[in-house]
Length: 130
Image (cartoon, rainbow, N blue to C red; front, side):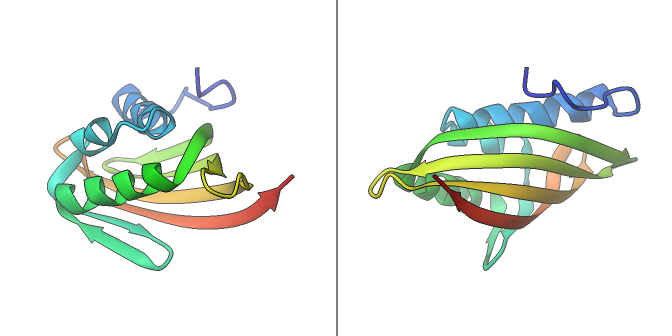
């Protein structure tokens, strides 16, 4: 389970499951599962890039999977308030070409519409690890 350290008492179980599905989809390089949880008109933002709509998000995920492997996501915290929330997770990855491993502390702000992600914005603090 990804959420061994997550406080689940106050989190809507549907949102908890959505976050866990997203973590698992990134770990298993499943771009179809990633976009299954997004609205058609979603906005997915990471530092330096914005992707609008499911196809742009899928293309961005596929580009990531072409470059990186061994993605691991450890959910630290989920905070929700109605249809909005925040996630803290630890993300690690390995560059396929260079073999360099990096780890990031990632904070995500999200907004749901009809149980799907309409807005997902990541704030990433990345560092190389040996």
